[in-house]
Length: 52
Image 1 (tube, helix red, strand yellow):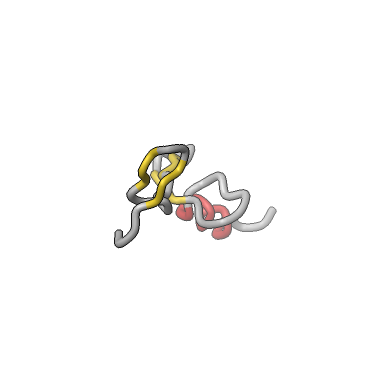
Image 2 (cartoon, one colour):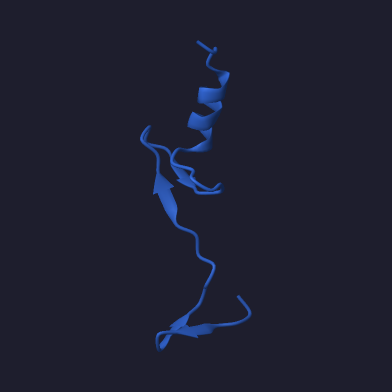
């Protein structure tokens, strides 16, 4: 990263660091959508299920 930033008196090397979350199925994912609580694989499985 070209620039360093200071926050609360401490230097931050990567201010845009992402948090990696763990889905209930065990897969790790990066939250990309609002209100996302599962990984994209689980979202796709849910969409492929036939409507009841």
